[in-house]
Image (cartoon, rainbow, N blue to C red; front, side, top):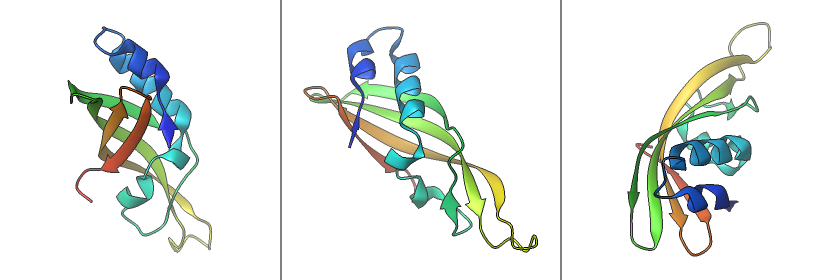
Length: 111
């Protein structure tokens, strides 16, 4: 599970979106459910992510944020001489950050 203490600490400040974006980008693709957002049936590449915080709200014991995530999808069998092809990909996901622990859970929206 992801741990986002800097975002939790910045909650209700002007720095929240920047802190959340930085921590999630630092996590990388491995801790996000991006495999649910790929379109070509291939796999998520290891290129750096770009995250945009679209919305955030107080949910009592948690912070909920809607995120836009840009990532790379690797299309394994593209007919390019057997070499995989990188393709830009995007999805939106919901992050829920527990206020007591800073643990975060992510769900792809619309999968």
